[in-house]
Length: 100
Image 1 (cartoon, rainbow, N blue to C red):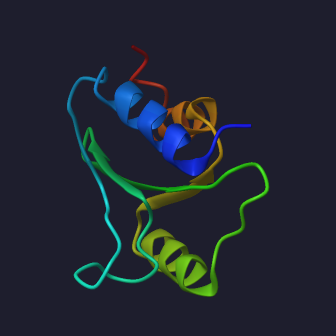
Image 2 (tube, rainbow, N blue to C red; image 1 turned 90 degrees about the vertical axis):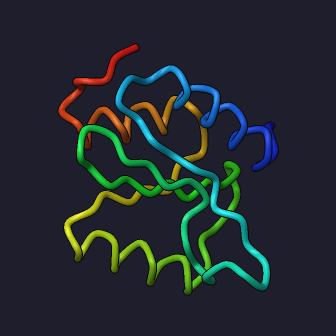
């Protein structure tokens, strides 16, 4: 089973292949905002947030609040457990226009 860091690296590598895609890895710590998803993506004008978890990982209450606020604001937010789930999330958010 892959750890969260390896899953995140795989997703970032995939995102680099997509045209018209701006993204960053959100880093926690004292300068970050608690609950913000791990990867923030802007692609074709759509805001997508990806919270990366292992197969057994669970979101925290603060992460759930952030995901809900993103969705309520018209953005897309997903919990993903693999690069394949991230691809599916991006495709569903963009109408499948970003096949690499």
